[in-house]
Length: 143
Length: 424
Image (cartoon, rainbow over all chains, first blue to last red; front, top):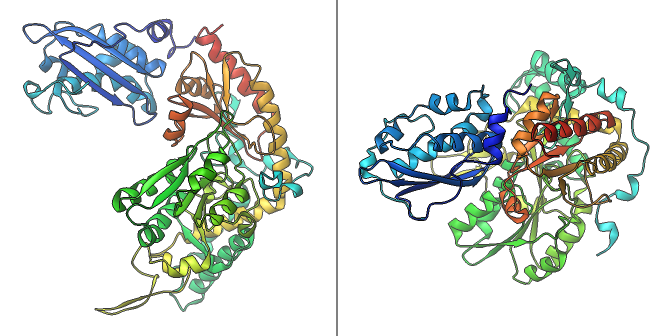
């Protein structure tokens, strides 16, 4: 009956994947949703070739933002920082598989924005798809 | 503290509730249907809906009376000027104030910014202190934070207790630090607490501090007798009191306003402008640079007069009864935790809660499917959210046209949230 709160979304909300901080992360970034103040912190460990080896996140948020980031973090292994930066927002929206209203769009895209920001080492735009900055310059921000 | 300090004029607020059907018929938007359901508008703390008396006043002004004020010698401009200044007198009368003490601004935020910029920059210096409360809206925090950062002043915070009331003993201690000003909400926009404003202003004055009161939530609910409240500055916004957006009021005691420099420079606020010398207009024009929101001011006056036809005491009685019912019904919802004081004379119809296992935004989204409008988020009160240890709350805020049936629909919708989120 309820599309937005279908079972898979609620499952990810209640038991988010990759939840928890990585103390030995190579990249990390924390940001919030200006609409509601919800915060998420994403941690990324890279392998010897600079590709994503492990991802973790923590934070408190709504079902949409938590499920979106949970689903997103399942998909990132093996990606380079350049590839992370080029992920389009449709990547997350397709994972969610539901219609997202304009007011909830930032909930859906918060995790992606933070993943890109971690990759970049500074705040990425909400709709950035790789046009901004050189990820090779990114450094691990202070945890 | 004396009990009478809680609600100025509370002794006169025992009255029969008004006829809600009759009141609802004056608000066209309340007939709106969403997905075949009638709108249950429970977000009045964000903005209230507007009665026909206000809508028709605005319509008449734009169709028949519009001209700039204090300029034209033609009759149309004189008429607009008369209406604008009449609006000021109506607001002044409601506040027990002199017309020169009523400055029209955009909203309560602008009113408080005016005080922080004009009075603050003249009177606050390095090492001075400003005392705020943990329950303030950002509009009564940010201007003071900016002022403190610029001047090297310090902010102190009056804590709240577990019931969401100000800790007046802590307040007394903090006053010993001799703050220049106390910034306090008359009614909390999150907790619904009606602060003991007379006690607060008296204690501040005894300690040599001025008081800037954020009256945004009190405006549609409580008597606004400035002398009884003891406010040095008082901020109102029309759109929360059944009036239009874009117009608010700064009340300031006349001797304070006389000594303060202008805030916005431009037309209307000057007496003379020479290349090397400018003199300011008299009050209140000194603080009303540029063409003011004329129609909106007239709309505000219409809203004040409309609320008088209901009667503030009757409106208060209605809200008190509905608040009691809402608190009782919400207490039946498992896992629901209500913030703010229990039912009593210091409890307004603004009810924030957290539903365990469901984020406020998800709650509000599902409630919207039931055509129940509530607010979810930090309510521009992040200092308070930190104090409460939550990221966001869901807030129900009542007005004179709300009904028990709407509260029942709210509770049914909350049970639907519990069903969808499998919170049993």
